[in-house]
View 1 (cartoon, one colour):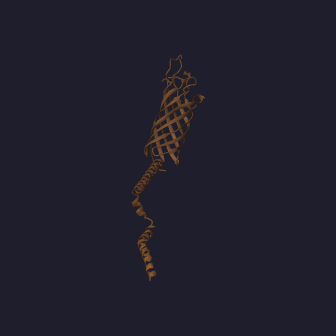
View 2 (spheres, rainbow, N blue to C red):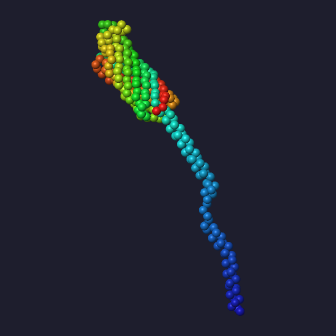
View 3 (cartoon, rainbow, N blue to C red):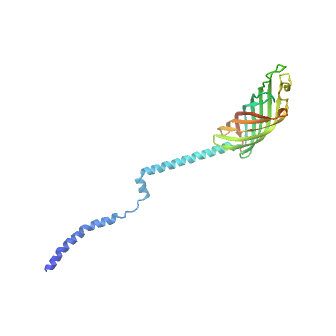
Length: 252
């Protein structure tokens, strides 16, 4: 009887300890492996990240729309089949074998038919006017007015096509007509050291640069190099430029 009372005295505290520890163990087991948060919960927990993602998506949509507008503008501008251009210009010309170079003012006009995409066929017309400086002579004619007219044609190719500008290349060949009279009385210019009147071969190269004012209208400036063969010789240093407006129409 004494032993059972002694065992009861030892068992009661042990049972009490187990009763007090059981709720803590159950709580620990229930919080040890929480379920993974849902995407909605993550978004609610990270509002700054959500705002950043939305801003990036909006910027991507804006860039896509802008690129689409640029592509449409380029297509609308450079699918025209025909263009006509005209304006003025300037050139340095050598009027005679022993005479110095002179300044000439020019007018310029032309037409281009784009046959295959970037490649077109151009017809170009120019007129040049200036005053030559002759050496002292017995005829007392020192500042004769001269002129040349060129009729050229050849390929034109668009190298660069952008929304606001384009760069092309021209390679032209044809004929040039020169008038080198000493005065209005048709005094022969050859007596003053100038070339003789006549028609000869001419060629040239140009780099037209178009600044688009709209799909069908542009301002063009074109550095150019022109070769003439008056007097049976070659004038190889005729450098200048033309500028003016370009009008486009039709569709390829």
